Amino acid sequence: MKKKNLHTSIAPLHYQYSLVPKESIPKTYKQFPIDYKTKEIQEYEVLFFHRLMKKNYEPPSEIEYDEGSPKEGRGTAHRREWKYYVATRSGGMIQLATEDAHTRVKICHVLSETDDEPTRNRLHEGERFIDDLLREAQRLNQLFNIKNEFQNATLSMLHNVYLINYRSAQLMLEYADDNEQHVKDEFLRYDARDSLTPEQKDHIHKFSPALGMYYAASIFYFFMALEGLVNILYYAFLKDEIRTDFFEEQNLSERLDIKTKILLMPSLCNGFKSKQKAGFLRDLSRLTKSRNFFFHAKIEDSLKSAAFVEDGFLYRCGFEKDSKMVVPSLKHSLKKETVSEFKNIVDSMVREILNMMQVESKHLVEKYVLESLEIPFWRDKTGAINFGTMNR
Image 1 (cartoon, rainbow, N blue to C red):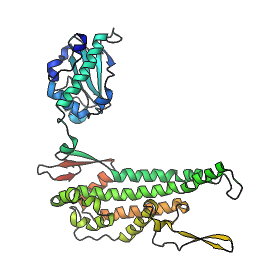
Image 2: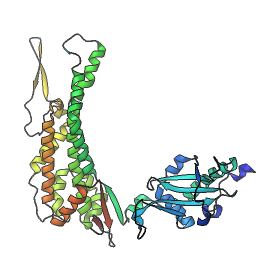
Image 3: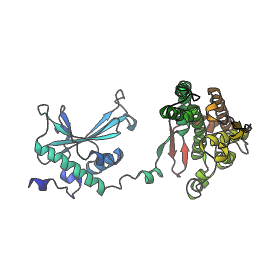
Image 4: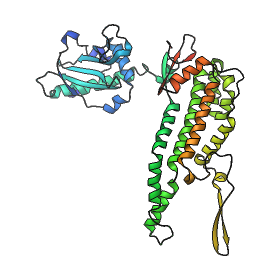
């Protein structure tokens, strides 16, 4: 008979577990976590369980507010956690709540101050509750579909790939000298002109390709920041009538290179001065060529030197350096000053792009893209996407 009670039910959750009245919730109690099928629970978004419980029980049993928030006018912005308390058949109590600013779901037995742990029967009831909760989740799995709802979301937050990559580049560059010195010291630990053991040769071969990698990585992050800025501006200001073609049907956001996107930006996007031409495309071409050399690994870009044998002597001779490149053609020749020059060109191009924009649009970009790690977007009644907040 006991095994039969562990079977999940097909009835909705509120038919099986009644909501505990507020006056019956103890003021002080112990929590005993139900460590059962945790991975399955974590596969669902916290918002999904919020909706599932609200559909079964209406408002939460308790709402916890941010510390220090005013008692009057506490809106949704001040809500930190929600809690539901349900009763089991034997008279036990289970709490399903959020924690860590409603980013995680926790499920616990509610115990009196005198109890150290639940009885064996209550432990089984806890596992059964999890089974029934997961069954309810499968039944109501359409309560939340992030891809569908994103298209109709009133407010959404975009990860600021520009600022994240830019600050990564700054931090990488800040520590580059020390890290590069460490790689160089390891590379020079053994003199390649001596008679070396296989292990010593392997040590040299391990560190020699890594010379300059921190400077090169900084360059790459700065370039990704520039690409991120351009992509953010297209998402924020692209004209509504071509948005579907650009991002979905024609997938132009992936097919167009950064130079073409910048050239077309005043024509395809709102918020730009009409017929404004970008005067920095030569610098952009130089940056792109330098980035491509280090990270696209084209064979023709790798042929920077040739070996010749003359009277039994082996000579390595370099081809003429490419004057169009901002950075040296060999990674190990990179210096901090070279990366700083690359950064200055990126900064100059960002300023030029902002100068192409109308005043209001420029101020929005300066406020949200250049300073905030998350960028707010909102959708109006017509379905158009707007940049910033609704009360900007």
